[in-house]
Image (cartoon, rainbow, N blue to C red; front, side, top):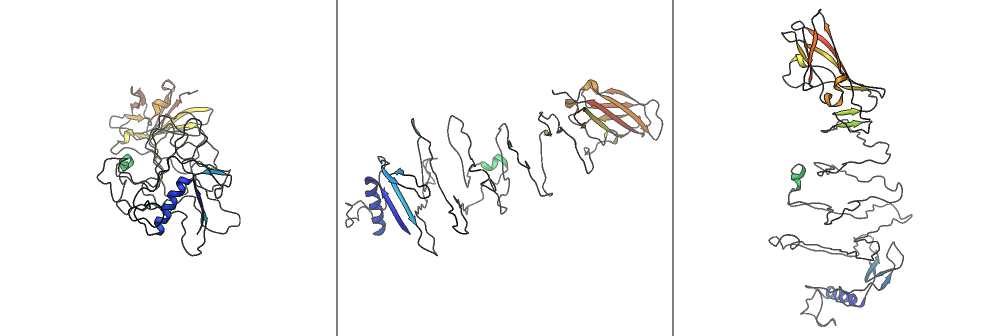
Length: 379
């Protein structure tokens, strides 16, 4: 590998000592004397103090050629056709600090890049990698940054939800900070229009629990504001979806029931109502609450019941019915099936809004009911 490097006088002396120390076998300061550095070869101790370095050297960074001021520049070109080549190699083996004081006193870091923006500064970057794939440069794999994370110690984070974040932890990439003000975004993916085929990719079945996990309380967990062809595209019929909260489809109003649909619904299968275990036939109704179009805002609840030995039954309305409908607009009709029941009638609506009571029927008889109520006008 061919190198070109330059640095300011103070840095030059220290780098020279560093390179000589490496070439001469890593001598300690007490062993030095033949390299002309007055006994200060750097192996085994502090290399140098650059606290007063001035960015006074001119250089043209690789891939970003405008003249740039710097204190230290190393640029090179590969030369080996069949061997790995690293322009700079930094290595640190950590075997101390297990019983020291808490962070930051026992932190071990191979490369630390820190920057402080003060009054009068221009735009700032703590780290700014660049990779340019030149025209007609061939077929090869390219990565701007590759993070190899090899956990050969123990599983970390196996507990569900927030319990999995209890120390000790192991993060491939962690975005943290301490600030009194909010920043624009923790991660931003930008560039020219349509320059990326995918934003974020998870492959090789590498994730066990959650591909994305939100443990906070933001205003919106997933916020799609563009115009994608599909907001969410799920191609596997084996996958399931779970929504514990109220859900709205085709509407911008705040949903007040489990599913609030603001348009037509096309059903190619059956609509089924799951009853609770042990529920009597007298309170079982095969029905759902629906909304018809934009010009007929009515909820309809209908089904069949089997009367109890006293010829009575309860029409239980669906969950969320009372919150979603105008109570005074509700009407109910009851029709006997298979036998005349001249005394059959609706005696009352429960005060708690959970349904209607039917009496005057034949023991074990069957009836059909039909309940209609206007939806709450939210506009």
